Length: 256
View 1 (cartoon, helix red, strand yellow):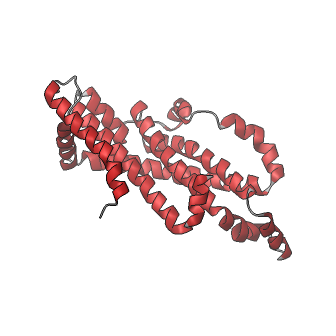
View 2: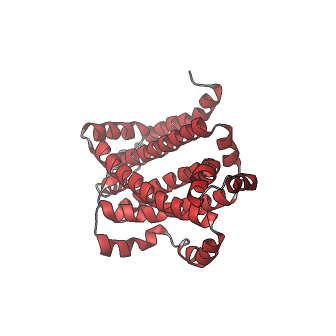
View 3: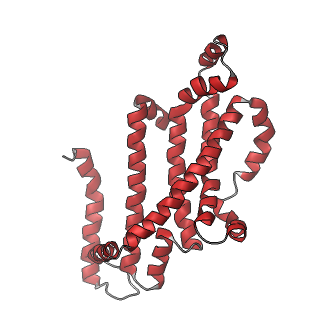
């Protein structure tokens, strides 16, 4: 059963849908250059599900988003741990990182396009670049924030640097690292769709643009709503995993 808070949260979206349908019927939004009422959007979505286009485009977008997240996240995590553990390396790399990090990921699209061409590799490369930075920056901060007494214990136990990282640093910093992973997952989906809209002929972003160019506002809005559902579901799953894995620590890290 849904809780009272859930019903309250659904009140606004349901009201907007009803008002949109009423307005659509009163204004007779049937022309191809107009927006579509919610009922037409639902019918267009059902049509896209039946012909398999929603499943195909969603698969393409999620493949590139998750692959780019895995590659960029792994690189960012490793560099972040290294910089957090070795202050000397952090100081040496600070200028380089702060010079490259502000570059918008979409700005490297022309370079990657020349090097890799269209397709999965183009999108994965740009997503990897975008996802690397939140993992790097927040992992570095998380490692620096490890309780100093834990580090003293590791030195007293005469752990090697690798054992210290694996047994002390990573477990202590893991809640904050997972928050960074959640942030990077959202960025991966946003960048994936942005690249598809801009230039790459695959995925949900490309399907949305094709519907717009075909003068199908109902199908275009159906894809747009579906994108919101996919993004919300991804964040909900990660939030559930975070709460199950870290409990109260996850709440504390979100507040920070």
